[in-house]
Length: 255
Image 1: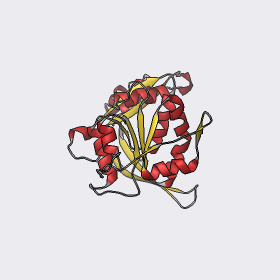
Image 2 (image 1 turned 90 degrees about the vertical axis):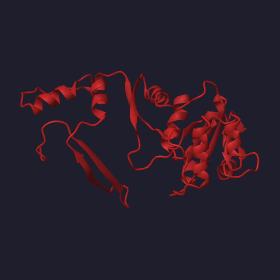
Image 3 (image 1 turned 120 degrees about the horizontal axis):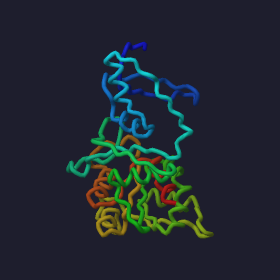
Image 4 (image 1 turned 180 degrees about the vertical axis):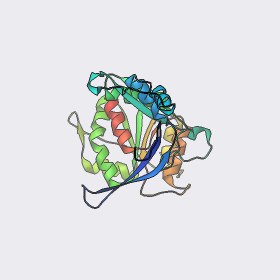
């Protein structure tokens, strides 16, 4: 009403955390008079044709509000972006604040794990049907610590853990256990060194089929070890996950 808009509009917000946990600055960085790709997803999920309602509003017709009761739904809907990194030779397959997705898929499940897993697979994540080798390369110490609780779950499911040197050392120091045994990750040299065993060879010979890696700090150079690892995983057909929360959710969903 404040913007005097009749019909759909797309708003993008920028939220910046403050020094205190309770302080946050929220800004509007974009507002377009158009329907976003979220509209058909929400319409499908809630079984309400919002485009039809918006069209009637723009034509000046009387429209009755459609009441939606979220507690009436017995399923979870998940929307996952799709990227075209594989088609762009040399592109760095990591996400940032820029709009990089070239499409989206929507999936439904009985719970969040099922909906998430369906969405990731539909978006192109090539998950092996059986337990396989998982390579871990976590950038910051915070990322390493956040991933630790999920490693025993992977071992329990039968996955074999591999890690780049820094991550492997952190796992060893954490003394994680699964089934009464210490969780171990086979150390691999970085993807940019010819010294064996290295991450690139492990992906090429299919010893590793899932790569979980988060960037270190603000790395942006195309020649970084992180870039080569991400690109090698993409070109080698491995399942690549570059977001920490996504990686944790993936392990939960598989478990």
